[in-house]
Image (tube, rainbow over all chains, first blue to last red; front, side, top):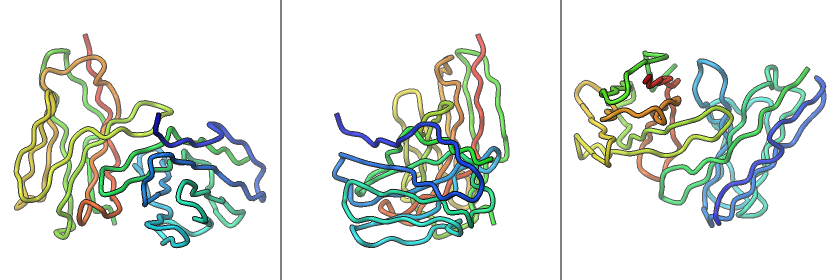
Length: 110
Length: 112
């Protein structure tokens, strides 16, 4: 059963700590994306990768980092430099098709 | 700069009636448009798309209309059902393989 797995569903961290959100897909999609959802602001693109070992900044990349060492995996690190890290994070993938989303990780930083 | 706008944050429609969700865009380079549906604490799911070479695309109860001159698209749901209650996001891209720019979403509530 193909899909995108984001783990964990809920994540809590103290301010000043880096945290890595996991995203794994078994859809054999080439491209992967990270979006962030905040109330009233829709989905905003953080980073995306169209092939392994390559990625580009999206609209709000500051304070985030990614890696794409394997086709199946696209982890997102929220660093202490991100000023407002509390949000709902969504990972997606596609291959010349509409984006397919995971079920998200809600990160709360206090 | 919000390139894709959904000016109605919420919409309430009676079951069986038509729901019309609207979306405007400013970037004339966008040529591929999509609608996604999202339930709380879940990822968005793809509903329907339209390419700029068309002005209408239909899939069951869902129809998307595109007015390129007005840079406007709309999603019609007929008849509306309680299970349609969700947040609907409009998205746009330059080409089918490109990254998507999303609107802010419209929360649809279908009442009995």
